[in-house]
Image (cartoon, rainbow, N blue to C red; front, side, top):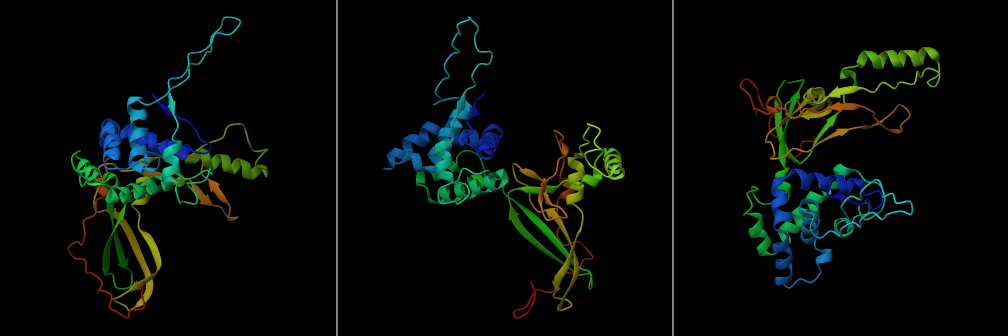
Length: 322
């Protein structure tokens, strides 16, 4: 196992890179197994700045993580005066400093040493890879199309489409829209926790004591929520209060339902743990998530316009809607 050195609040970068190079075979092949080809081609095309080339730095890191190549071997533990050796053997690790420098270039947040959000970094990485792939030389374009990953772009491995269904509650007519995304964001419905009775009892005890500290018995009850409950919450209809209806030529209430129009080869999910409390403070939800090894999303596949549904008229120029 090869780890990644923490450069000071770089855990967001480390976790993303470990996941994509540890779990995505296409990326292992493209960057780790073909690293030497990438290095040689970089210089053959007359380029002389590998330290600032995103593709080169991705290959360098992938080769280190996947094949443990290009890593300085840790020194063997030294014997102490008493004859005892260090208890823990140093783990192989690689520093992502050059990749961090390249990917964070000209970005106010990712070029800093501050803590960042892993999902935002993941999406930034996909965006930067797409830009680099489109502007890269012909040798890399050919390599992209020859490793069995669809249209070749890294982002294509994670890209999918949502289907948004809007229903005007005044006319009962519908509108369908599609939008691209590369991450499935899920709320954590605490009210659906499997141990909700324990949570309510704890809150009741604290409320009756009049003091959260005095009501603390030493055991903190953390909500246990299944992914199925998160998906069920995702599938619910959402109220839209200010929807412009082309049938009524006015704004009014509507419902919105989200389904998958397409599925990606690899679906990245993240769970929204941050929320704003009653005092407008950002808080982090402490919850335990039960993630199964296998799950089916077929029930969330969009069907498009169904029999019996009537579409809203197309919006005309001059309509004061959104």
